[in-house]
Image 1 (cartoon, rainbow, N blue to C red):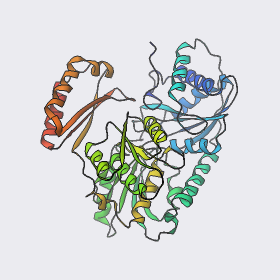
Image 2: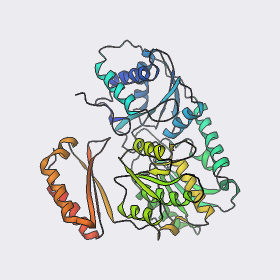
Image 3: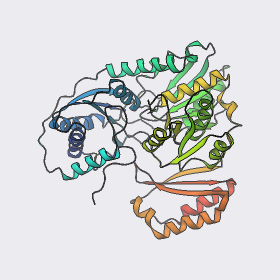
Image 4: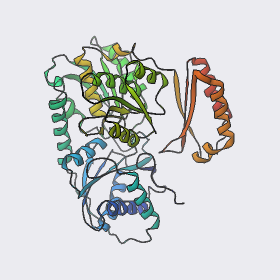
Amino acid sequence: MQHSIFGTDGIRGRVGLEPITALSLAKIGYCFAKEMFGDDKGVVIIGHDGRESSDMIIKNLSKGISAQGSEVKNSGLASTPSIAAYLNIKSTASLVGIQVTASHNSYEDNGMKFFNHTGFKISQTNESNINSLFHNLESMNYQDVVIRESDISIKETYLEFIKNYISTKLPILHKNSKKLFVIFDCANGALSDSINEILDILPIKYSVHNKKPDGKNINDNCGSTKINYICNVMSDLNRKNSESIDLGVSFDGDGDRVIFVDEDCHVFDGDDVVFLLSQYLSESTSYSKIAVGTFMTNYGIRNLYKIKNINFLETEVGDKYVLEEIKKNNAIIGGESSGHIIINNDNLLLGDGIITFLHVLEMLLNQNKKLGDYREIINKLPSKLINIRVQDKESTLSSKYNQDLIKKINNSIGHEGRILVRASGTEDLIRVLVEHSDVKQLNYFLDYFCDNIKKH
């Protein structure tokens, strides 16, 4: 059986190791173009998030795409959602896209997310076909290609898309006179070049941090997975200024995830935001009162859905699974605790940190509240999520000893919570989630697991 080069969200790995090597990248470019265009020619838009390895990856992908006969259009530094939105707006069969990114990972990693001509990520069938062709491709004739200068029309199209989105779907953001003071963390990532142009059209005062990517500083103690950074910034500013900070907003490296912090540095993750927006949007839209989450969604949040008569649907971890469930059930919204959130807007199903922020901002302005005012609504089961690096995540999870260990802990926890262990789809990690009504017991069971797991 062939090992798949795809993970839960495209292809990702350590630069210099398979499949993020020159030859394999050229093969990936060729196989992607071949799967999307067959024997015809097309155009592949390629954007990136600012890692130092981006140029090497784009160059080698372009060799393979050119060998298939298709053309590459370079968008330069751009968010993943901007590539998807551009494709959705243009929507022609001869135009597809690749985002070169490793999302929230450190700069040593990189990868690719692949999009079809409608702006949706390619299907599992597409992935399977590309993987099969990749492993069976014996030789390929390609030459060096010249990478063209960045095409600014892609960024301009995205900015116009956001402006139109606000005017048609969120008009209160034009009319409201109240200005919140918002702090942003761009993780030295894909939004760094475009964030100010977007924020300038909103009724907010703002300060943007970590928007100077140097190739190595992406997600370096900043961004949505390092939320302490923005909390520290807000605390410092609150001490120095008489004017208080209303909201903190922290994006990931490629701009499709976002985590929020209220005025008291209390964190609102994706579970919290999906619930709050599902409650808000269910009162003002015609979509089914359905919200989609994953099996990682906090059990306390699930109980809140029951109380509010919103149907909660569970799916696998991964935005593509959340997307499928939203489409299938015409759900209002769906997302993951990591902050990847998809809002249903007339079949424009786009996981975009900017759009999520715009909806949260509208909710706050429309209800004349601060984010902290919603804290008393959120009643989550105490939880901790940790990552454990292993050499072989599949062997670690399939080990009978480790399976028995997890079963033993779950039996001991009973109805008071759970332990959930899964393999990361993008790194050599296993992710361990423990939820328990008693924090001391939570820490005990987490420590017990870490002390007794056998790493393979």
